[in-house]
Length: 104
Image 1 (cartoon, rainbow, N blue to C red):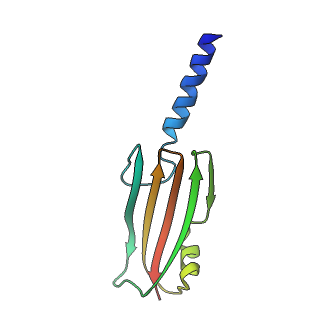
Image 2: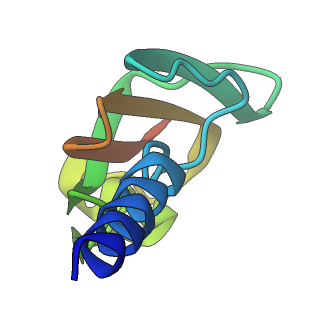
């Protein structure tokens, strides 16, 4: 019985540790990550800005719309000049991925 409990605990720990980075980021911090990373920058950066985000909890549940289309809609943008992304993760408990577009 005790051996089965140890195996279950090891499997649970492995699941938690592999879920420490449920959002994409070019730089990974096991305890904490908050990174801005570039998407595509055009010749100019527009005057309007829109953001769209998706969130995850415990790397088990993820929800949201972090699409470029949603970010453009949020900012009232019809011509996109640049796209950036922001990733944030705290201990694999809470993760967030945002798309930021700028344009006119």
